Amino acid sequence: MKTVYFDNAATTCPKPPSVVKATAEAPVKYGGNPGRSGHAYSYNAAAIVYDARCTVAGMFGSTPENTVFTSNCTHSLNLAIKGIVKPHDRLIISSMEHNSVARPAYALSKAGAEVEVATVGKTDEETLDNFARLITPGTRCVVCTAASNVTGRVMPIREIAEICRSMDVCFIVDGAQACGIMPLSLDDGMNFICTAGHKGLYGVTGTGLLISDGKYIPDTIIEGGTGATSAELEQTGFMPERLESGTLNTVGIASLKAGIDYVRSYGIEDIFSHEQSLCEIFLDGLKNIDNVTVYRNGNRFVPIVSFNIDGIPSSSVSGALSESGFALRGGLHCAPLAHRTLGTLPEGTVRFSPSVFNAESDVIKLLSAVKKISKDGV
Image (cartoon, rainbow, N blue to C red; front, side, top):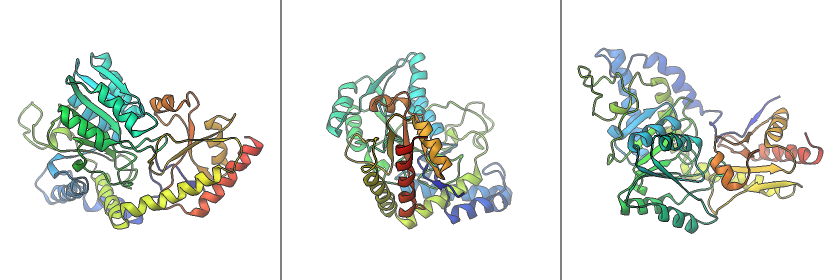
């Protein structure tokens, strides 16, 4: 039985043919260690890495030297948050954050940092008021997701950025669920965009990005070989090498460049429109199914829908859907803060997240499976 994949908020699947091709060719065409030698193999690898760096910088309004390759969005967020916030600093995060923000914040609080959580309200105005009350002159950093990985709620990041700029506070945005789906740029006012390469940008897993405007240079949490200032024990100060210790994932970086090229050729607005139309079909269908609760707090969303069937744990629903040939994610989605905000602890929700490779017919079949579970149980 063929499985229809609706778990693209975790990682997109399938990948575009151009990404598959770039991934397969990279070990042959770019098999050397980039920036570590003067021979042709190393040079070719360095060339594709730099080309990809320029592609990323162009998409997000940065520069190549302020575009850092990481292994995933969690890696990027840890580099940025722990590189900026020190013990006894004040850090503000939102109540819809993924554990990739919440856990570093908790670790910093154990080391002495003051961490506050701004409640995400029913409206953007309420949310902004909650942030504004907590951002004091002593605040070092604010971290907020661009869009929730649980509900798809789009956060007012441009307005939060304005508050941060007026207070001279570093602003870090988690773009994992927004990049490639909606326009996002450093021109919007944030200092850092952290994102995954393997979600809306369609690269392979093991790819992430830390993109900055250069105002803040994070302290290192990892040191090692960089190919720059190698005679010194002190970690190099040159960006991006400062934050890229060790051999880069050239294969993944080549795939990420191909993924971004695919997104730009398809068009971000067209990607959003297609995926959002599938969400609307799904939401309309859920209205006609008994005992289904949909969780949407806000007015603007990326293409994600979270729901539950009354009386059935989300993990059981997602398991039953898997047996019926549909891949959706049930549970807490590594975001217990968000589920506490929604009131869906401890069971979480079932999450539907389509991609450009899904069709309306896939959604109609999924709705039939959800209706059957609602009627017959698991």
